[in-house]
Image 1 (cartoon, rainbow, N blue to C red):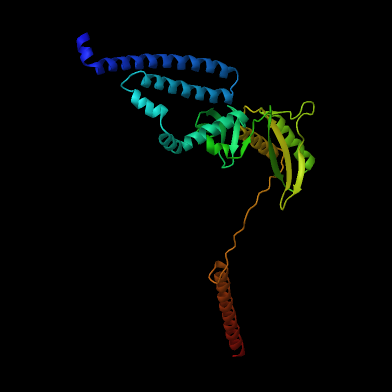
Image 2: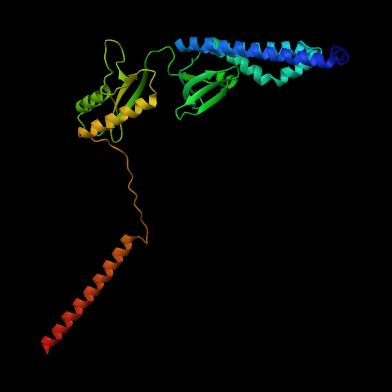
Length: 310
């Protein structure tokens, strides 16, 4: 057997390469599994975008080192490894040009991780209208879950260039401003009390400022056909703003209706006119009937006069 292996060194080198690859893969899986469990424990206490991004970078580095170790451990693959991992200037330039999008995403990911315009679990809205909760960040992209539970995957380079509105940034409360329309004949004091009571009865609303209670209802404007009232509602960041809007709008509508307060709305009367419309036809019919009546009356009077004279 030894003589055979000496005569065919490639078989021995292949066996050594396979053994090294299997052992390295097993060790890599163990390291990644342990690292993942430790990260989950840390994120369970506090989700942090820096930890998530660093974990992705470390995983990439560990996998890269493992692949390089396997490739460079055998004479069979060492020439290939030198070309790939050591390379020349030309190969490096070609690889750099081909990897520009990847490098841009990685660098922008580092910038996002360093500046922290948002964190895992924050509710954000982008300038293109995309809104949702940040679920994850990787070396190349950020995952945002929208209101309809669709996972939006946005490259880091694209996200880093956008204006971001973060509804959870450095705050323990969030707020939504509501505007309500009532008719001109409405008692404003009554309308304010009704709206304020409906807001306070919502399970989502909280006092806006400590010691000051809920925000009062204000009279904002005279509109063309309504009076405009407004109120700012505060709620905890754990609740989606859509749920709060639905609850407040439903409660205020029902409260205004129960109090007999009119909610005005715009409507349009469509008037169709022309020579062939129903009005012209009706007038024409009336004229014909009048003419016939006049002729009948004249004929009757003439006949009666002739009979009397005779």
